[in-house]
Amino acid sequence: QSYIEDGRFELALRHLKAARSVAPDNQTVRLAVDKAEGVIRERIEAAGVVLHAVPRLTPAATEADDLQIGPQEAFILSRLDGVYDLQTILKISPMPQLESQVVFWKLLQAGYIELAGGEPAAQPAEEPAV
Image 1 (cartoon, rainbow, N blue to C red):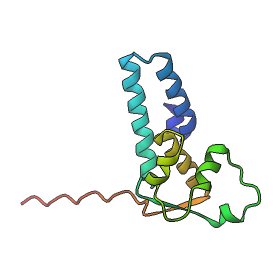
Image 2 (image 1 turned 90 degrees about the horizontal axis):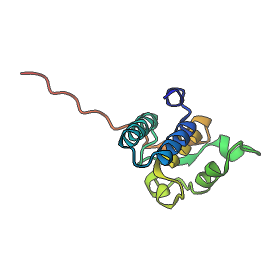
Image 3 (image 1 turned 90 degrees about the vertical axis):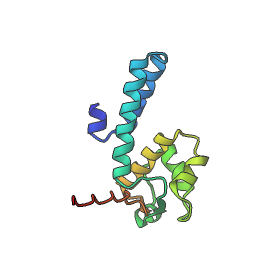
């Protein structure tokens, strides 16, 4: 839980995956993992990493001589063209959707990408009581 609170989503997912593999038939574990993954997804989407957003490289990514990124981040960056949205890119990613979204979130936090249309959907205004 503290990994999620601290924004260390990759570590949280690693531990959740391990818990699921240790007790794949345990309904309590499955529900706890699903709930924790839901919290991660909510936090990432609140930051604008939503499926309809279109990622674009920032000058920080294009002008840097040596980006400090791993192979997952490099894979995702190599697929960005400023046209395809996250959902399209996720379809060709070998990683599960939530893991890929975490990679996009990390790249966004590092300043390597920006997301066009990544604003969370506005909540409908409540109708005034009559």
